[in-house]
Length: 205
Image 1 (cartoon, one colour):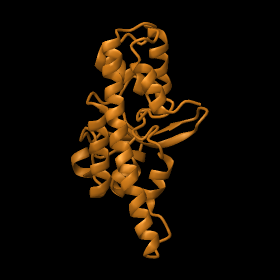
Image 2 (cartoon, one colour):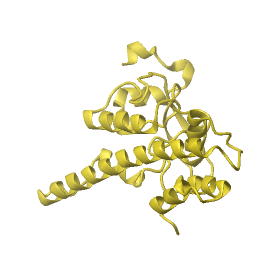
Image 3 (cartoon, one colour):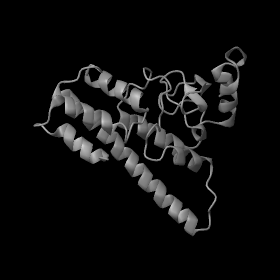
Image 4 (cartoon, one colour):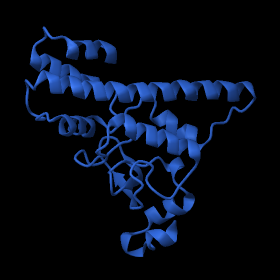
């Protein structure tokens, strides 16, 4: 099975068939897709003017989409390397039990779905790398009462019962599933309430 870098080379190959180059970009999303496969594809197409159903898109637009994806992947790989080094130091110091933050990280190892968008058509408008930088910065600075990506305070608890059952807080503004360690206990409790019982966001902060 081809890895991300091998697939990226196929996307960049000017001698390659355009349909194959497009297919290779889609395959890259099976290795790294911060919003999930469908939402990340929708994001890249929207930002770079690609018709999602076009089998032979403009190669310039295709390459710009790949550049954005690669930049985001570099951000994530640097974060994972730093995380792994921190855990080595902690284990060496005798801290074997991981915390809630580490539980979240293990579920997103590889970066696939790290900023999952439960609705593929609703996702942040900023470049993927910027979204990941904001998310990583927020996770390193402690829990807050707003979305770490768009600063919105509309957080609600959602559940999915598909092939991969999932439940968690979702930002109603930018659409990402917010990592629970990035939110205060009070914010999480408010998100779980039925909409008509939630206090005003300012009062709950």
